[in-house]
View 1 (cartoon, one colour):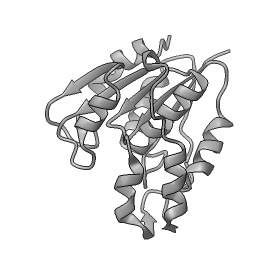
View 2 (cartoon, rainbow, N blue to C red):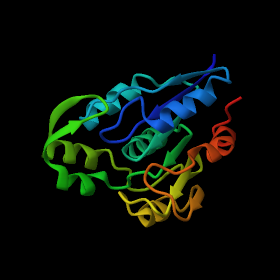
View 3 (cartoon, rainbow, N blue to C red):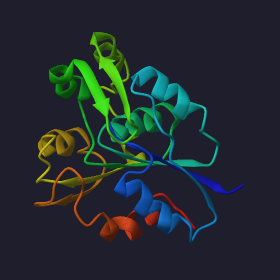
View 4 (tube, rainbow, N blue to C red):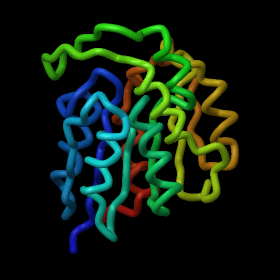
Length: 186
């Protein structure tokens, strides 16, 4: 059975994000089932959708809010995951975005409300029980999330910290060999 590689996009993003597409181009050279689901804005629904895609041979990549989801799935199901500029406490960041929202990448309007914030709190992994399964890729120039939160939270995990960059993870392609190696993609 081919390894399943699931890329989990971030908040108000889509399966057509730059990192998802570029990593997919790389995965075309491997015997893997590369999957980038278009996630619902409701956190619990997104997790259910992701759980339905898990197989015994799954590995994960998650960016921003996708990194938060990847962390939850990694620790709950003991799945290797690479997290890219991950959200550590997205419920704090999204608090300021409560109300009407628009996802331009999926072209739909929705209401972000307190039930979403509470759902994210429920999905928070307070203590990493299997830090060896996580690999943090973090750029310090992230203008959306405080990089220090991720560096501290993932302190027991493998880390690649770069000075500069931004939330999109500048020159993401440079990390490909390291990701493939960590996730044991052959």
